[in-house]
Each structure stands twice: as C-alpha cells, then as structure tokens.
Length: 188
Length: 188
DNA sequence: TGTGACATGTAATATGTTACATGATTGA
DNA sequence: TCAATCATGTAACATATTACATGTCACA
Image (cartoon, rainbow over all chains, first blue to last red; front, side, top):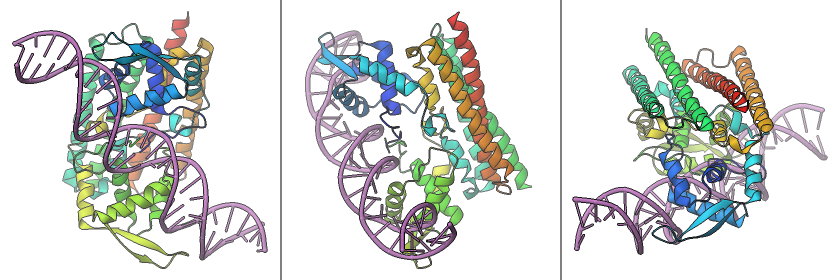
C-alpha cells in the first residue's frame, strides 16, 4: 500500500526522509541515501532500489533536488543536492500542523495481533508473549550495543532518535509483560 | 507503499486485521468490518472502501472466507464468514516466527522528523516540541475519555490493546519532553 | 580468473488511496 | 421533499516490493 497519506501539498514520509537524509549528506548519490536506510536499525525503512531511484527522479522533476553527473564512482551515476524549493519543502514537512497519522498512536503489528489473540489456544497465547518478549529483548540488546559502540556520539538529533527507539521498545516490553500476566490470570 | 511486506505464504497486516475482525463479527458485511477500522482510534487503519471490498474478494478467491447473499440491508450485499483455511491462516499469522517488521521498533513519524530537526531554526524547533506534545496530550485525553465511557469493558484483549496504545502515547510524550530539554540545553 | 560486494538502474506486479457512481434509509 | 448518512461497489492512479540485468572493484 501507499503507506503514507499525503497531506495537501505535502511530502510523504519517504520523501521527507529522503530529502532530510540528502540534506545531511549532500552532495551524494542515491545509493548513499539507500545505505542510510539499509543501515538503519528500524525494519520499516527498506531502502529498496526500486523505491529510491524512481523517487529521486520524481523529486528532481518537481524541482526539489538537482543532480550533476558523477564520474568518481566505478559506473556513471549522479550526485544530488537540495534546491531552495527542496529546503522549503523539508521545513513545511517538519512543521505543524501535521496530519493525524503523524502525532496519533503509531501502528504496532504486535498490538494488532493482540486484538486477535482469542483465536489462539491458551498455550499458544503464552508462547506468543514469551517469544514476543524475547524478540524485543534481543532488539534492546542490539540497540544498547550500538550505543556502547558510540554510534551517534556528537550527533544530538540522531542520539535522540536512538533514545526514542529504545524508549518505545522498553514501553512495549513492559506492556507485553503486563498483558501476559493479565491473560494468564483470565485462564483461572 | 505496500506498507506490509508479506512473509512467505503469510498474510499482510491488513489481511490479518480483516480476517481477525471478521472472526469476531461473522457473519457480517464488508461494511461492518470497515466500520471497525473507521471507528478505531488509530489513524493507521483508513478503512477505505477501495481497500476492503477488493481485499475481501481476493480472500474469497483464495478460499479463506466464504460469502452468501444478504437481503436484510437496503441494497444487495454479501455476508461473509471464515472458512477453516481462513482460521488456520489467522493462526499462522498470529504465531511466531514473525518477520522483523512485527517485533522491531515500530515506525514513528515524529521520530523520523526529529532526525531532520536540524533543518529548523531554534524557535521553530521549540514550536515543534510544543505542538507535538500538545497533540499527544489531546490524544491521551481522548483515550482516557474512551476508557471512562467503558469501551472494551469485559473485552480483555481489546482492553489490553487500548492500554498498549495509551502506554505508547505516554512513552512518546516523555521522550519528546526529554528531547525538548536536551535540545534547549544545546542552544546555550 | 572467478567470486562476492558495491552500485545503478528498470520492469512486472501488487495493493492502497482518492474520487466517483449509485441506491436505500432517516429525519428535519 | 431535501439533505445527510449508511452502504456497496468500481476505476484511475500512485507508489512500494520483488526480481532482474548490468557493470565495477577488491582480492584470493
């Protein structure tokens, strides 16, 4: 699905993320931007070539970015930079007012599944919580390892983003553990 | 975007949510299911007709649901029920192992924006945090009002989902407030 | 010289959004 | 009787995914 509904005249989430990434790395190639998504710990940003290359062509046609030939790499490619209109578009995307999907409760596939959990046997339900908590714990460990390795030191916004991701993982873990207890109590 | 990448042989998020909702309300019309999405406090589930009707036709072709004519409504329509294969598909979708997008850090449009916040002036940054926190506070009030009104009383899983959504809103609010303070400190 | 990682794309496909058309029901 | 809402769809469109084709580079 087109996941991101476009507010009037506004950028989609992916467009905003691409322009924002370009702002930090310009001038750069589409692959450089893909790399940022591919290396991101969030599984949400796939960074697939079929998304990024066509998107950057569209943004250039819209006048938000500009490119020049790039000879330095092995193959021919293009180096992109923001235009003034692109910079304005980023600001408009960043600033309020936002569409409801921006500030509202974020989607959570585990929460969606819990709403259907009645469909499982009691044993399978216990297993659901056990495995989900284990998976989140693994994610938390990965995030902490990243942090220890000094990723984002001296990059206050990236560090804040990492703290935010960690906070969400922990809050979700807490909620799952509580819910597991509540569901186990139902059983009696 | 197709928001949900399909694990091998598995349902997408929307398919899982539709089958799960059907399970709770069967036999019912596609509109009944749309209604659940439309009434959901999460802005993620749009419940647009153009998503639901074609999706249910597909699910029927795949043998996961079955329909019969419905004369009770004003216009002709169809009443759907799950097939045994549909019930199995729900269980498979619910149970581990899950693709990374299920247990990983959920996407958060506000977090994405924070990673680009350098693009704003200090004043605009302050405004960003002020407005974002205000929007979340409003959401929290709405959720509490729903709760007070007794929505989901006696429905343990729905109640757990509501608690989860509230927990995420609060964790996000806390993170935003902390980040606002950290950013304000940078300014000096 | 062959293999795997890096890099630049394109094509076919799937699916969600927006917008529209249509009809029934309800209440002012 | 008019408007709004409920309800059932369809069609055009946008855009992300998967899979593929291709070329370069490092290095064994």
